[in-house]
Length: 381
Image (cartoon, rainbow, N blue to C red):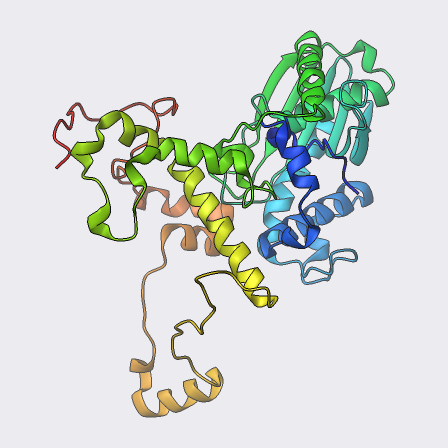
């Protein structure tokens, strides 16, 4: 069971108040899960079993987790192990350590509650630690709405919290970058100020005519993004009337005709537009698969590549026919070699590895990375 104004969904409802009522009108059958979400759930289960049971992640290697029924691989053992090690280090001196703990932030958000991965109180410091097992999107703890609400919940639910004056909000995302934990530190007063902000945003969610505020972050996982009138209107307004007819390549306006301002607006909305179109595509596939149909589209058998019917039989036959030529040999990549060697021996090849400068990438002006190059493109041809 999830709260309507959940902590995990706070990045959405705090930014777009109308999304709460829009999602409530969507059938649950439209909401889908994925193997990545299931894997993340399994990783959290493994972490909780280790932290609450005292065993190392390696104990569960090649075993099936009891709740998720997920098989534990060496990769999961390694990555979850980094999180467990980090939490145990901070829990060692803590007066209170709770894992997979339910917290209520109802004082600020009516009916609000959630489940925090780890909450540790060490004297005057409150630690809220969250495991992110995904490897696609890096998540920052800075102004992280989910962790802020967990911290607010801890203020109401735990003893000794009146002594807390410092809050450490930490995200451990072992499959991204160097896998190091990232922490954002705020004061208790700053946390309570954010609580008042949440109170105001939550009230807007239940207004008679809540505001639609489309955006890349809040729309990405919103169940209502396919049918959202606010998002559709935003995209149409972004692209303006220049794209009224896009049935053929020749019908598109030239870049010079549109001008830099309109092109910039369209480019800034690229990810949001692509996400919206991908959601529509998945919705259309689901509608056709369920027999409802979708105007102008149908499902067909996609292309596939040939493969061996029985790999073992094929291998034996090719070895007889081709000997060593039956196999391709290539040098391991640096990440593959480091994984095979392990952390202790990986240092032996450190001097052999270089990281070439990446190709120039176009990003928004507010991206924290420094700009490169000094040329300006004046001609859009």
